[in-house]
Length: 444
Image (cartoon, rainbow, N blue to C red; front, side, top):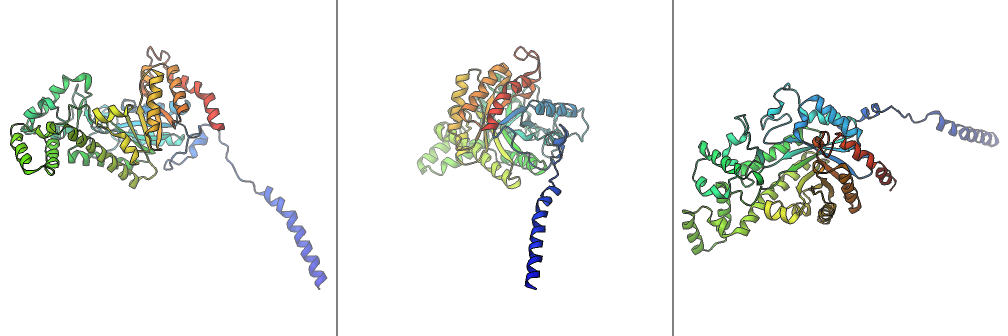
């Protein structure tokens, strides 16, 4: 019986040994090898797109809102982006206090008036870009809310509904301090004064110090984060226009309340009496503290928004377009991006190093990386003002310095014929020049 059992056991072992190789080859892993571009269609729209095939280098494009005016333009945008090897689209969905997406908080962009109401530019970009593995970032202009010429036609625009939210220039702040913002003359004075400063002013801004402005902008960001499968959200105009703004009543009153807490009785009484004649007395008596107060208004909202986005969409990347010179940004625009990075409130920094001079670009990107606190840096290149060869040179500099990518301003200029882009083939030329560099990156 034992011998018979041994023979059976040996037979079974031999049988199993013979079957194992057969099992490995009998059920191969099924791999679908679909021709391009159909192989990309298996990417679910709701799934965040993967890191690009260029390793960790992101190749991004700022896309100005005027490109998003029709489904055909969106299809062309995505096709060109894919064809030319770009990985990220940063699409402007709030340009001037308007919405290029489905919003209940702001009026639909006037430029979309000829399109059916169901046309949602942001949704279409996301759907089509995700199908071909391109990431989409929602670009939101923060405080700049209206051009000066022409002013918004829609009377539902916030500059008409909330003129008290608009930044006030220092030169007319004494006069406007006691004026009711509901008075038509209030807004018109700001507009007329601003028109005289066109060379230094892009338009009308809302006040970062106004609590309702903060709440409004925060809700706009959260609305997008909740309702769209974006891969990221992008700050722009997250600053004051210059040191001559904002001297609105709310800003001056809030600063006064802050300062008075630390004053002795004698100085408090003196300044209170002077305030009756000059509502700027606190700001002019403590100029450095007022400048810091203004920086704090922007910084507080950046932090609040970053945390809010991460609660809703933890994998979304929060980025910002900033002035490349960090000293100028902080001193004259109250944009303290070094502090934001140190507090972990940005995932990607996009310094707008728009200079045509390569060595200036090198210094700006090097400084950004040095101050990045370990966060990603995309070198912002002003493609509209230089040749494709100059742009390629700066891309290579950004790579040498260790930037995680680059971003061109802008897609829109790159597809238009101009003296610097006579064949309107800017993206193609950049793509072809970088092919050899991509191979080097993949091999690392």
